[in-house]
Structure formats: structure tokens, C-alpha cells
Length: 145
Image 1 (spheres, rainbow, N blue to C red):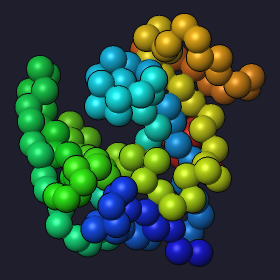
Image 2 (image 1 turned 180 degrees about the horizontal axis):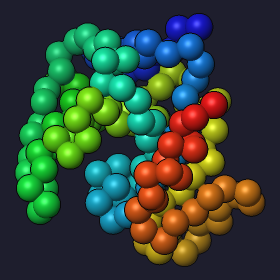
Image 3 (image 1 turned 120 degrees about the vertical axis):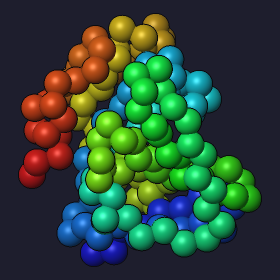
Image 4 (image 1 turned 30 degrees about the vertical axis):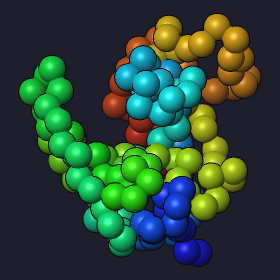
């Protein structure tokens, strides 16, 4: 199975070196809402080595209040964020799930920062939720198959 994705305009494309479509999680924090321009952000965690990216990629870097450095990879043409890495989680890529060609097939069993969730949004039954950030073991359960 080939797992691919890309930006809105098509100038940037990526391939994920994975056997199966990964699971995603949704983050409802205010930062993800402002980054996405939507009610939440849907993301997939995987090894940075699994991402093969082509096209005019821009690396937007910033330092968070905690001191870690975040590298946001985005299309240099349409500016869609494709994935990011962070010095706090070396070797981990956070792929924007909506950029996957098959995003409509994703399972989203985990929602975090639900205390910031929009009041009109109802989460599905059976998903795991956390008021703020999820502990590492919950994240690992999502991605273990």
C-alpha cells in the first residue's frame, strides 16, 4: 500500500513509508484552532524517517514558551502545513491528517484538549478524551496496532 499526501495546490507531495494507514488524533486546543482556522486539528504521529517530501517546501521555525524549537514544513506556494517536528520530540513527525490523500478513511480514536472544544461539536461515542494533553501511554495506544 502506498500512503501519499500533499498540499492544496499540488506543488508539494509526500509519501509515508508505512504498511497501513495510521490512526489520527484530534486536538481542540486554541493553538491548533488558530493554526488550522477550524474547530480542531487532526494529526498523525510517526517517525520522521517515514516521511519522504518533495516540492518547494518552506521550513517555518519558532521557539515555544517552553524553549523547544518547532519546525513547520509547509508548501512554499499555497502555504499549507504538511507536518512539523519539535526538538522536544526528536525524530517524531506530526503530519497534518487532512493533507493525506485518504484522510476520509482515518480512524480518530483520541481527542485531546477537549476543555477547549467548541460547544457545538459533539464527539462520537467510544473515543478516548482528555481535558488537556494526553499521557504518553494513551498516545502509544492510539498508534499501536
